[in-house]
Image 1 (tube, one colour):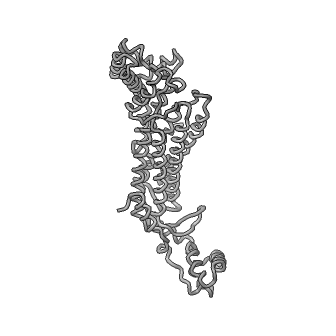
Image 2 (image 1 turned 90 degrees about the vertical axis):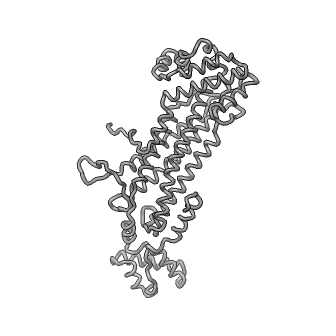
Image 3 (image 1 turned 180 degrees about the horizontal axis):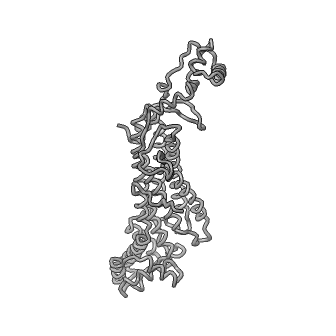
Length: 437
């Protein structure tokens, strides 16, 4: 009830995205669309030059007022007409008759939204790039820092913390690539009229469309109308949703490893952790990412529903869904970036935890050594028996092995020296992703 989480924006990414979707900013984009349309049409002789000049001058003088638009909306009941009625109040009479000529509501909203998503993708990618750099630094610094590798929540084999981070880093790069692929796949908007046939502007319609979108900084349009095809929104949402779950995974691992029972990581956090327990320092940023990321991903099914349109176009789209998804994604990235900036690694705790199974974490290494004499299956079975004896008699692996005549000559290696190829794999990862020294 009183937990207002929207203020959590330690690195400013949420604020940057929210500024793009602010009502005043969106109204200003709509005005820019109308100006570009009028200027292009005037240049091609479709409307009087004086009209285009009046519309452009009106946009310079207009202060977008969402409250005014809402009042017009209450009166006329149509979102685009409400915006035009508010905008036209700033335009000289010479431009009144030619404002919004040859276009339709969906042209404006689709083009404005695609521009917003393109810019949002850039902001999110910049945040992910900064996160990547922090992950690369962690991976490099801890390429050979030994720790427990865990599968299904149990101790498996030794790894390095750098190797764990390199896995996060590689996934973050794929997240960036998915978002970049979307931006390349859907670089444009649309200006083609009611059903996309350029009926109002005729043969000059496709040229108007191309020039308007270029003037707005967007790419070349598709030859056929795409207002009725909403897969671009779904693809954007899918890329964002996957990225959010990747962020959630990182935050969850940090959340677990910083717990008092592990103590392998900690987070510099001056916040009060409890109203009753002075010793508590809660992983607030972890919790924010872990809880907000699934909320963002949960919006994807709505975008998938948009793909199924009725005939040439319907009004199933509610831009607020996309806007909220983008803003909340910015918050997740902002919190994850701050989390990594304040992460403290405790190698001594990682080393200590390697010994919690009393050496059992090295049973695979011993199985491989015994396989030369006993064969793999027999060596595996023998090690299972030794582990059972460890458990029943409270022995260490070294003690249990020393009691077995077939294994007495096999030494138990130091787990901190048995990281496999983890350090080399970290180096290869950093090299491939462009983070090599």
